[in-house]
Image (spheres, rainbow over the protein chains, first blue to last red):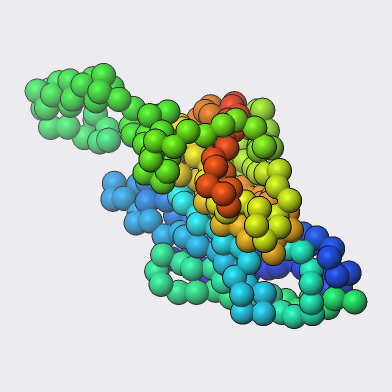
Length: 109
Length: 154
């Protein structure tokens, strides 16, 4: 049922060395809790994104474990202290085993 | 639950009514968590280690009109240096069907131990946040959110 989950991330393109930047992410996803019942009385099975990971140049910098209480189309923001130019890789792990990824470049002046 | 008018006999209607009454006595339709289950979850993570209050800024609305989308920001006071940083933060809601909301793992690279997301709240309840520092100490914070419309179809 999960429709195409499209991740969106907002990372400043440039930052000064030592500057703490805010990264905002959003992904479209139903985050089905497994608590709801369909019209026929059957429980709709749980399907949520259970993990969000942000890595910079291959090193994990921030992780979030999401549970069923996270809203549909989950939003996540966090901070990162810019040091060097590189690339972020964001990964969302779905209960069904699939991964959604996004990348963003950061230039440190 | 089946509606009464589909029933074939009065007896089964009566039985159903009794069953419904019993269900009401036992509890609501959704099995909701409580303060104890949050305490159990924290115990699972950290055993009997005591957490001190403070150092955490838990930013949630006092009144949430829509329980489906309640913004939450946690910010922990920390220099976020290589030797002194926030390792993990766990957020719980004591009135949701499952108490866990989110668990964060920070690294010194974050620069600032702060994160925001949006959560579902089934009813008016307490949000409990527990933070683990790199030296192993625990901090906690609690805030109540009044929910006008629940986020779990209720």
